Length: 510
Image 1: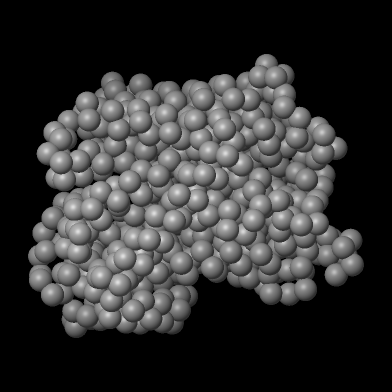
Image 2: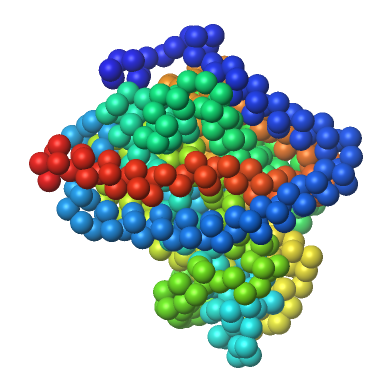
């Protein structure tokens, strides 16, 4: 069985033509229509966005909560000792394993959003904290709200229960690493062959491609902004495309070289650079405020966890914050879980769920406090120093306004641009690899398939930013629309994962 799973197939025998045509066709149609009339497309997408958030918003909030708590129960109990992937020892070292997961799942959004989101919530308090007038408390509340969006629930949906299901069905049962495999316990062979399976796979590919093209496009805009501010290089479309071409080359080569080479190397570099910047800011930035803010905001996050997670009183605010993030992360869910399954062989249920649902969110929240907390400290000390450049929701301007106020500001600013580029590259390479796995149903997708999807995502990003900010904005809203079918595909894991773990615990004598 292992031989079949790990065999390197030829391109023609492995490529899933229906999934390739449906997902690629919808993406191509979106781009062509956006080029033809971006206003028309934006109108359609915004209408679909409004319907999606209104009908599915509350369901998404419940789905993420249940995924987190069920995973936690499974990890804490004796079933947490169940070993997955058909190996008695882990395939990767703990550092390599954690590095790849942290970099892939946190992604490029974890840099610019870490600077911008706390500032956005500080300038305009979230409804739950609207009555607060003390500036320091407002800053702590802003961080707590950011923790909700990038913390336990966001991480849990990206590979905890779904990762467990994939590992069992793929490595123990020999089913392909495709999103449709998640529905095998419900529909059996019916979903593995035929139109239903193709539709499931296509929906998940489309959601993840949309979710990855957005950050790639934004990176072109953000780095171009940074290069003009730091080096005087004109912020033009030519500069943006040049950045995208460089990024495409980096992540495509990384994806082609595989999980054990390029993807692992990029992730290791990313973790070391991020750790260096965290320590530097902690030592030479507003240290006391960062420590106070992290402890206080994390306490508020835990205290208000259920009220924030179940908040429904202000639909307009909710749609553009919490529900938007939930849609974005849900869209990534199945393919991220496939990637988690691919790199987690030999790990126990407890190790996987604790890293993804607890350890990674705690580190992410500290990362947000290091960057966003520094921005809040500078803003409190000198009102307008961060909020001014941030006017108009200018994410890269917020980041550079923060880094420029640190010692060695120019050097730190450049390092943050490099870090963001590598962050997006690690997401690009891992998602290129995951999409290619869906197209071929194997751990080792054909190199030409990886190259195609890597280049295609970059080209789509370049086309959309040529339209102007409206192109990428339309795609951002489209991400939430594509999350609707994906969220239904993820639902069965709530009862399938516990059932699988119970069966495996009995089999392994636990």
